[in-house]
Amino acid sequence: MADIQLYGASWCPDCRRAKRFLGDQRVPFDWHDIDGDPEGIALVEARNDGKRIIPTIIFPDDTHLAEPSNEELADKLGLARSAMMHVYDLVIVGGGPTGLTTSIYAARENLETLVIDSKGLGGQAGVTERLDNYPGFPEGIGGAELADRFVKQAQRYGVEMLQAVSVTRISDDGHRELDIETATGDHYHARAVLIATGSSYRRTEAEGEDDLIGAGVHFCATCDGPFYKGSSELLVIGGGNSGLEEGLFLTQFTQKVVVVERGDRLRGSKLLQDKVLNHPRMEVLLRHGVSAFRAKDDGSGKLGTVELENRETGEKVERHPAAVFVFIGLDPNTGFLEGQIDLDERKFVATDMTFMTNVGGVFGAGDVRGGSTKQLASAVGEGAAAAIQIRAYLDRLEREGPGMDRGR
Ligand SMILES: Cc1cc2nc3c(=O)[nH]c(=O)nc-3n(C[C@H](O)[C@H](O)[C@H](O)COP(=O)(O)OP(=O)(O)OC[C@H]3O[C@@H](n4cnc5c(N)ncnc54)[C@H](O)[C@@H]3O)c2cc1C
Image (cartoon, rainbow, N blue to C red; front, side):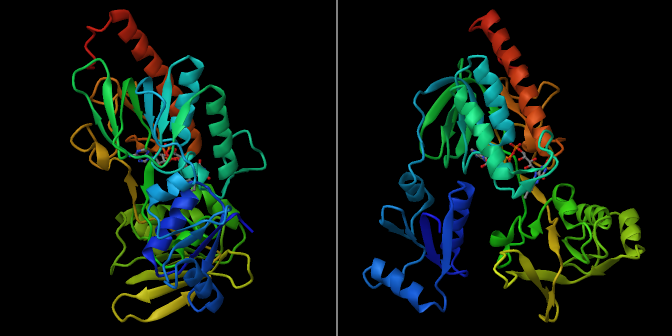
């Protein structure tokens, strides 16, 4: 039993938000769905003076929070949300593999470094069940464990790290330092900033998806396809180029790949469509969307059933694939940069060969950078390479003095 107990219901958006927040911080908790559970309902009512307020979250000290905001949760968990200083050599926005790698390199060179992450340190790698293709771990490694190792290494070099704090603006006012503003209202100043905010796979938002990510619901075929070697069926959601390409790739692991597309035709290139439609072990299901993902009832917590809905007739069908791969798009986490930093046509950060953006002193690396390969090993590689370029930039700033033009 985990230390934190979360009482809620699957239909409650605030419960999903609280679950996601705890998951992002990688805080273990037990989930209790009180729908149809008289004991759970009684407990929630007893805690809230007879009111049925969810989520109700009970902590190890036996206190509880009813319907807390993410900020209240962060305070309760004792997360550092304000930094110790206001001026740093380098501020890194995003504490995923890219940002943490840069921070280790920078701090080893005695640069005062602050990492700010809107969720939990470790980024997408930290919330990935298992990583099997990261060099150095022949048996694979759990994402949370790898993230903890990155964090410990950064701590060893004195990197300061904030969690559950979003950066909302990076401004260049023409002063010696750039200004970094956070959602908590703090302003930090630094001579260099690295944007390492990654990108987010679009989710179907169907019922049960959050709970089954990594346990049968996946977003990366290269990363997780090999887990399903020898399976009889895999489902791919999305009939665009990624869905078709990745679906073809997955045929090497399974007997049958079913591509599910909500529209009335596939959207990928003609060449890919031909390959998929003529493949003897691929099937295409048009005009269908996912309405629910359900776990097996053997207590394993793994995906058992996918419920699909015909978008024209509303008819529901159930399938029981070994896993589902969702390819309905990837959004870079760059909304807060629009109008301040040049983005490419897909809204990824545009950089030159030295990882510098159009704003002098502001760098971009990892999954958020246009042209990056969205793999952990490349994120770490970009983090290291960006650190070296940032060091060179700061050296130049030092040599040329405060009068140096920070522009490119
Ligand atoms: C489910 C899944 C499985 C994967 N499996 C594998 C695998 O097996 N092998 C592999 O090589 N790769 C895998 N990947 C890809 C790999 O995790 C990424 O390539 C890698 O994490 C990218 O690192 P990053 O630091 O660039 O970005 P991220 O890991 O995305 O980190 C970015 C960080 O920035 C933070 N952030 C975003 N916006 C802000 C803001 N405004 N202010 C402050 N912080 C912000 C986010 O909270 C996040 O922590 C997987 C990805 C997913 C989603």
